[in-house]
Amino acid sequence: MHMRNGFSELAKLMFKNSGNTEKLKELLTSEYSETDLIAYIQNEDPLVARAAVFALGLIGGLEVVPILVDTLKDSDVYIRFNTENALWEIWSRSGDASVDAMLNAGKKFLKNEDYAQAVERFTAVIEVNPNFAEGYNQRAIAYFMLEEWSKAIQDCKQTVALNPYHFGALAGMGHVYVRLGKIDAAIDAYKQALIINPNLVTIAEAILRLRHAVQGE
Image 1 (cartoon, helix red, strand yellow):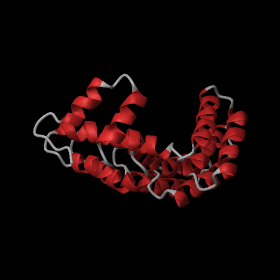
Image 2: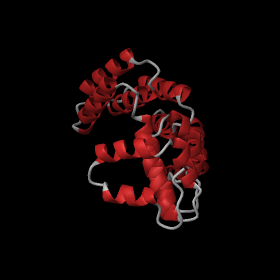
Image 3: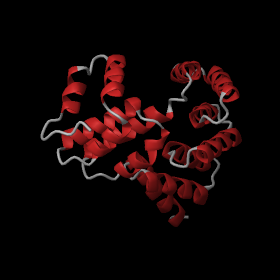
């Protein structure tokens, strides 16, 4: 295990190679195991912990997700920020480069507001790997933008069935329920997302707005 006092070798490695993601991944994989990086999260130096969380986002697998979910409640705001990004990175990796390429292509269609094409691309992802939760989550976003509410809800539910930690899908489910006027269901979905990730400030605010709206009726 590569433990050091102060500014660790891990943090130095990441700082020196921050401009070359692929090289950084190779170095991390050769120098550190997931067990090493998990241990670094508990380091008393916050710079080390932040680096470890970021590194797990680059090379970690689904098995580290429960640990990262716990880290979403860390007292250090930068560790929490890095953790949320790390989870999204891990969730976006299927383990198959061709599937990941299709997912990224779908995301580009989403960004360009070509939602029908995005649905087609994410559907192809799901057909190739029906156990890849992020394929359903991204398609749910596309369906949401197309206002196909029942399909969006179905994909959100499938995402959570495959990945119970997916606070993004739970928040998305809440958004759809709001559009459907199902306020109690929306609040429940939002609360589940916050339990997993208490850093979702906009979701907490949405719950307050919905409660005020209900009380004002």
